[in-house]
Image (cartoon, rainbow, N blue to C red; front, side):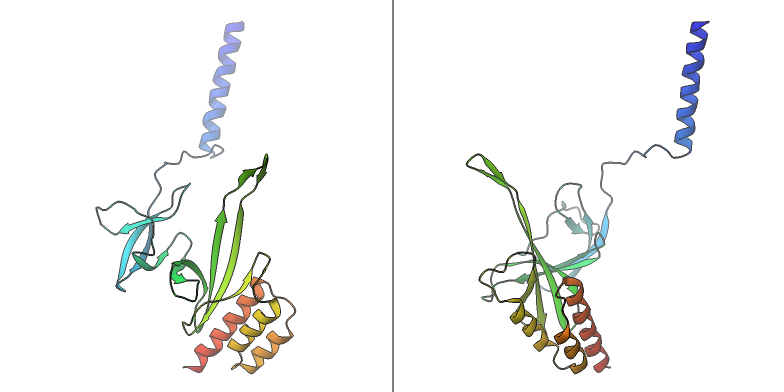
Length: 214
């Protein structure tokens, strides 16, 4: 009887496994090959080129022109002014942080219009020193530019040692939106200075300017 019970038990387990698969209880097998994403680049000549993108599980975004036999490559400020990909539906622009206009890097554009808001990430690796490990950091900086002027930092997630105080940075942004008196008055009385608040006022100002030009 034992062989029969063993066979019956095995059959029951197989049946349960098949039913589970049929009901979608087990994860699907995913092909390791990343699916292509659509987008475009703006090269240094100012030409817009439709591209395929791919985002590996580990690694940076890569692109190549649609229907091209070229290999996928990383975006470089030597080749591109900007790029846009459906992966995060965001425009990245090659812009210089320093006022001398050199060494551009790709910044994530958060707000578009008369005043543009950009985000910069600086990732530093951890290291060992005197037997102790110091963890890496992910510093985030936010910049604004009105009418495509030079960038000005208005916020970061780090201690702003040697930089402008929050009061000065707020006064700078207040000056940018001063031609919308009602909005400027609201911002001047605003107590919060988090990213959500800044985006709200920049977006509202851009809406104001957009309506004024119609």
